[in-house]
Length: 287
Image 1 (tube, rainbow, N blue to C red):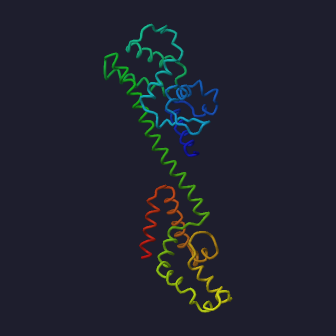
Image 2 (cartoon, one colour):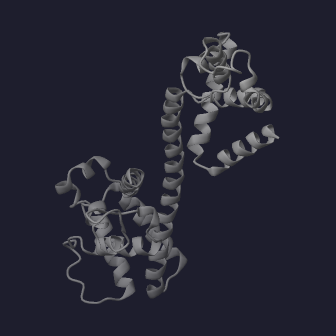
Image 3 (cartoon, rainbow, N blue to C red):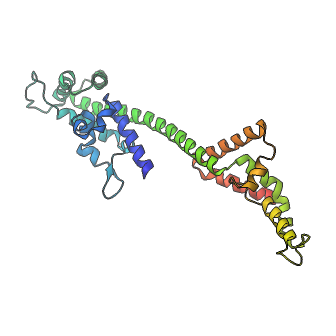
């Protein structure tokens, strides 16, 4: 749930940046609702495309809004802006007059940021160069705005994925070090002990001092050493730490850091492939 909320906020800020507005305005609801981005996100077209996060909270997942919905919502917001004084009241609804109306709003409205004004002017110029038919120009206008939005969301999505993986890797690295999960050390221990572990466990009662009395001091000592040799190689317990850092030097330290990084990478990938690969590796060693 928290990851979804983070994703929502990320794409909300991405759309604010796309419209050339400051993301700091979104922190003040009263100020944000009067911005182009605020009006857009609260428009009926966008609200209808929201995904319910809980019964009490709804959130806009902008990356999942279709380009057509975005284009229509943005045009509706522009059309609802105060009319330029020199345009007067528009009495007809022809496509050509609609284009002229939007151009007048773009050029005169103080609510548009310079970046948004420049992008919309560029889109309108492109539409007018593509087709001179007034009715088809409106169709092209919605398509070009949708294409602009789709391209921006694709870039934002790629940036989000990279940032999410980086954060996941850093968080997993902290947890891996805290629990001491060294992939290289685990592989080395399994490869060294798997072949002999079955024999040791099978003959544990034959250990000197344990045949007649499992509670004898000698038996307890030998069993303790045996359990220490077969301990799961994870954690900071003394038995595991003594084996992992038996000869502490620069090479061991670098190898341990490499093992932590490898484990963190596997965790950050979030794929079952790593676990399946590790299970297959253990199975092969056990044969």
